[in-house]
Amino acid sequence: MVCTFGDATDVEWWREYRLPLREVITTNGRMARVEFGRNKRWPSERPELANGVARELAGLDLEKARQKMAQLLMERGCLDGAPEAIKHLVRFYEKGDRPLEIVVTKQWFIKLLDKKEILRRQGESIRWHPPFMLDRYRNWVDGLNQDWCISRQRYFGVPFPFWYRCDGEGRPNYEELIVPAPEQLPLDPMTDVPLGFEPAQRDAPHGFSAESDVLDTWATSGLTPQLSSGLDFDAKKQRRLFPMDLRPQSHEIIRTWAFYTIALAWMHEQKVPWHNILISGWILDPDRKKMSKSKGNVVTPIGLLDTYSSDAVRYWAAKARAGMDTAYDETAFKVGRRLVTKLLNAGSFIFNCLQGINETQLSLSAITRELDRGFLDRLKGCVAETTALLEDYDWASALASTEAFFWGDLCDNYLEIVKGRTYEVGLNPGKQSALATLYHTFRIVLRLFAPMLPYICEELWSQRYAAKSGRERSVHTSFWPEIGELTQVKPPLDPTSYDTALEVIKTVRRAKATEKRSMRWPVKRMALRLPTAPSKAILEALTEVRAAGGIQELVIAIHPDQTEMQADVLLASEDENCSLNP
Image 1 (spheres, helix red, strand yellow):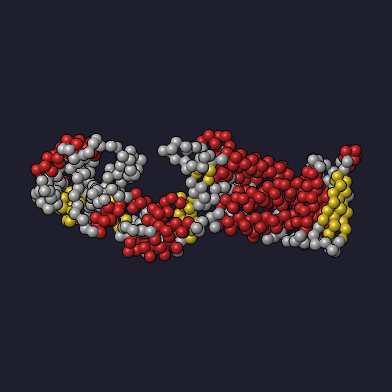
Image 2: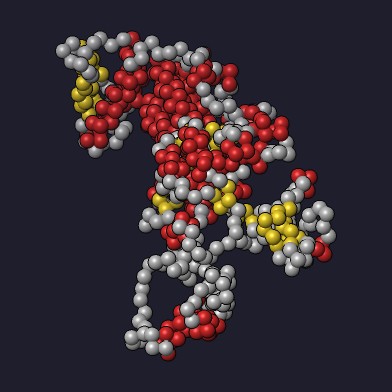
């Protein structure tokens, strides 16, 4: 088997068993000129015959050399019949159409195998989001079987800043490395000259020769945190910024970018490069294949921005969870556009209600109704949950939490329940309580949505909440909402009042939907059976729900044998509809 470096196993066996090295392929992919019988490296029982064949093969590319070898074997009667084409598995170079041939060259390495345990611990001291991605890092470190080759034979890249002394024939002696002084850096050895030499001595006898290799991509991008924080150029800045807080990257380069960044940070500073690492997935096409320029299945967002808006596209992106691949799905863009439209409509309604009302009249102390206080308790829960999720880098769940509150609690329920109060003439305490609640609620909702829907939130913020100066000029520079903003609002007298009111209104809606009636269809009579007598706070909340649901008669009965509320709903008939509506 070991007649050529056909795969990595051949290389390992050659190195392990110290087999002789006989290279017949040059770096330009052609057969080398070799001479048999002159030394032990190229032994031959019939050197003249061997050299004759070698001369006919020398300089041919590999495919022509194979054909020529078959021809020579046939001419010498060494084959029993004509050669037949076969197929077997061989490696091809990346994005190429030729088989991979392994040649022996000098390379630069960084030792890693003696650091596996410390690099594993360094990775484990970083918070991974999502946490299971740490296993991919561990698996890569545990599976390392060779050191890191950091040199590449390319035209472009960061050069190795070294030269070599040349022998009497102008050939580089790779054992005599010329290292520049620190003050010479940065430099390019292909154009710069080492100290003590003249430009004319480049590649000349007893002169110098430049190192032509460049650094591996990861050997430079692995220093991204240090380059951003100042490296050795600004020690004060680096002490302040390094380690950094977060590295965002995709999952397929955990074994490269993440690993090498962690390795280099340890080698340079004995620290982790960042405290958190956030792993994203890929964007998949509608057939759930990775989008790739080479495959031609990339969908660019320009047309989507025109069709659905920038916020709708950003909404789709924010729905993608960390570590998970996300498929291109226009349904999500439509949902995002619908959310943006609803946010605009809700803002228009609230701002219209607030016309002529100044901020002094909308203070938190003006919120006195039980239903308003109960609703703000729900808002506090949304703020706490969304904030905790974002702090844990779970933006998709944070968006879902805010979205659920906006659609369900604010638009579907609270706005519908308090509409009657907002339409009342004059600024009575009930109307003032509702308007103050809407004012502060929408101010918080815009800030919760702002990271995901930046444009519509900034537009709505500018219409009512923007200050002339300071952080409040923009929703994106304003302070993140906190529960403490609502501490001036007294808690509801009965913590179950809001939930009870919602359950009643939901029961009415289900009854109307079952009968295929409009949500404005009147309810002739609703009977509630409660396990305990309702508190004054619950009765106050039910009064508002009664008006919102169009309930003409609400009857409450106490049934201690029950564990939860039950209700019977009687809708108005066709004939009664007209008379009950007023």
